[in-house]
Length: 139
Length: 139
DNA sequence: CTAGGTGCAAAAGGTTTGCGGTTAA
DNA sequence: TTAACCGCAAACCTTTTGCACCTAG
Figure 1 (cartoon, protein in one colour):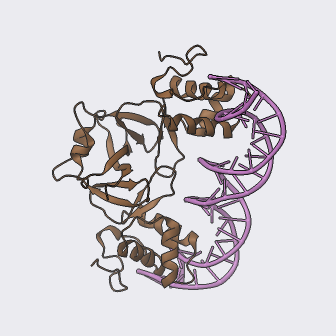
Figure 2 (cartoon, chains in turn cyan, orange, red, blue):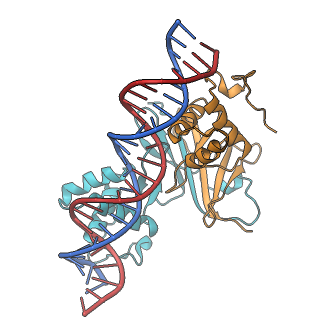
Figure 3 (spheres, protein in one colour):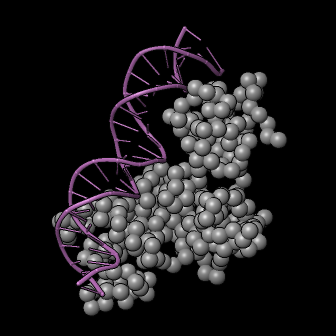
């Protein structure tokens, strides 16, 4: 079970320093943590509404944005799809099944580093890496 | 210099088998091949217009779609940006400079395979891989 | 107390679609 | 000849923004 952000520890999460923890942001964060299935903003909105009737889609977008900016959550992009959100902060990629749309985390093998694999020009500073695969799950 | 698709060899390009080569598709393809700088659909549209006054944005989208479907071109996605298009069909990733927005190809080191790096579940079939990096160029 | 969030509705892009006329093969 | 494509404009969807009110710290 993940550590829920309570009123007593609103900004204690290592990634949430300096982020003002409002009810709506907490709700959005909790939605992402409780079903780690890479929902879109609209899906987060639907789930958040069941616990917090008045929340608006725009607010969900704003909350997701704030969480992403503070490094609490990652945004994932697949072709022709709206953004999805992932609370897994470890180094990993994503695989999407073409038929079902299901997204799964794909961990990096331990000790492996993507930059070992790539011929990057001298002196570039990499701040963000996104690895997305699409294909078919065996099932 | 790349091999221009002419009327004499409209579908000889290995990747373009079965693709009906209209004037507009050829123009769009030529735009991508002559400036390999990962333009967006709107940028392709602007460039295509200078050679083909009547072409419409919707047609550019349709042509890009057709070229992507036939594997002649790849679509690249960066956070918060509209799709960009890349005619480089070799295995490579993309790096975008945060300040200028410039996108460069990042080749894989030879002999390297991305799947060596990832803990993929048994039996998945990977059809497409996208690696996108963002950060700062040294300059 | 007040800087910063929220809700709402409207606007802003980017991309897709429907239809009547056109064209590659 | 004709299935497929193009041009246009309108529709569609996701995401952002402006403004008045509200609230966490």
